[in-house]
Image (cartoon, rainbow, N blue to C red; front, side):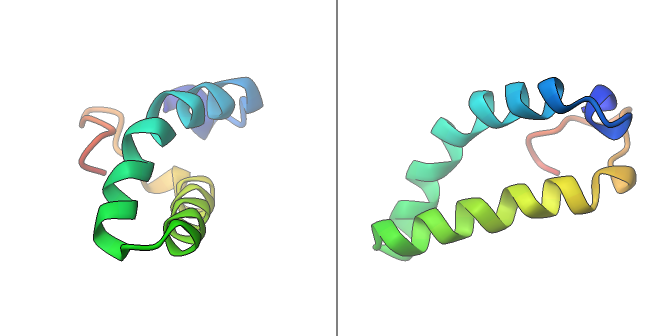
Length: 64
């Protein structure tokens, strides 16, 4: 996430590919809808990008 904060697009892509397969099933269970889960996943990653400067590198990414 530190590299993402620095604007590294490849790091963002790596983060996306690492965490999306874990996040999507959770969102699908919560929404009960494939479409809503896909929308929520997209929104989550937009927020990761938008608020990346707020991430504290001393803390783990998963709960953030």
